[in-house]
Length: 560
Image (cartoon, rainbow, N blue to C red; front, side):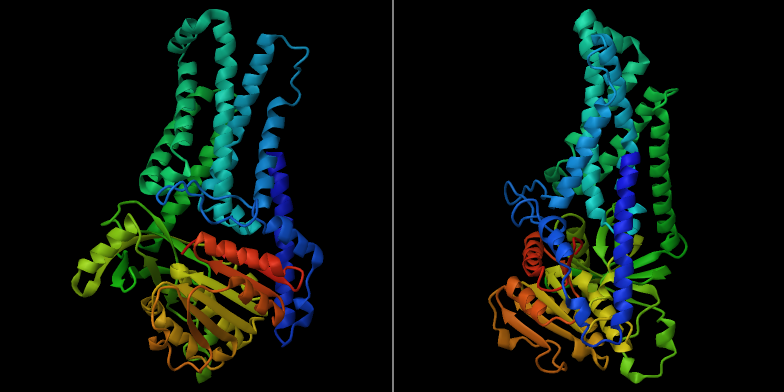
């Protein structure tokens, strides 16, 4: 625990240093049109990003899923830095299981007893970080500026370690016992001892948790997986409680259960507060072209709006108590005070909501919940209906927002429904440029879509953004349509000045786009991507190639 705490402290200091540097960069860049000082690369940091921090484990693949077939995927590969931390975690557990055990001096029975005790204690101690890393309200996410996806990765690896240590704990008892009294004697001991039976049931339940958690099962039957996982974990903790009662390791279990209970209480309290009961949250669901739905949530208790937010949505009439994550695409509500007091009509259309009273989501139809949502809306009158909904969130706010405000050049990549994550950043950064509160001087969106009808997903919101005087000075867009069509016949944002929006056919040359952007960048450049795994990997590879030429930082988002 002390080692993990020390590692978290180091990462916190690292994250705090960069938060401070980005804040200083933003302040100093507000009145500097060229920002030449901040465009210069930091060669040591660039080398770390190329070879460790942003580097995939092998050549290029990181977010692109490894697939056995079109229907079966087996997960993704970690980055080199993540792999290094996983290796360190495995090594630390091996050391903790064997350190200070006298292998030479102890008898076989004494050695087996000490090993059994050590494996058991370390396994139970690992339950504390295991539970902490699994929660949506994990306090380490904002403190360490590490996304929840990364913590989920370490949660899975810690779970595997706990099961292996638990099995080692069992074998360290049953093998010496079988050598002494035979396997029939082992069975008799298990039947006669409630303590041993509780331990056996516990390890069977933890093993079941491991066996039903591989990526193909999680992705194919996520809702079923989530419910079974929760029930198995709760029952396993109950039997482990009885197994450890009166023993030193029991305190670790109490800590794990306390963290789990607190996180679930916070989650439930937020859901109830956001609107459940007399004045519930409502969701107006509209089927729109391009196999998608637009969901407009009206929140009785609004929250502070910020780019990068996502929520977990439940529509009880479609899927009772199943929450699914979606990026917040657009918000409306009370405007910020400085916008309300402004009489400058040039800022019309660029007022930012202080409180998100109406939240808009764009959801691509896939399987399960999203397909049911689409089918229900399509069958309704005018392809629109209103239902009661539950909202858990928002999450993710502030992690990337403050960072993006410090870049002179911002390059946003989106593939398909990934535009939902980028829209709030476009709005926020254009507003920051118009009002002079962000360092951004050049903002470019690269959006890859399959069909021209996908452009209608965000047409109204884009028109609002371009209503602000000065928005065309900072914002440009390149749209790539991958399906065969007549590009000249596409009409979109016709009131925007010529050259600001360029629509082309085919796929983008990501390497060329990033390279050219780095050659003419103003200040530091931030690159943010939200899209398919292979698309994110292409952008990551392109950013690694230009490291060392100028100051470039790569970020990615998995929600779409």
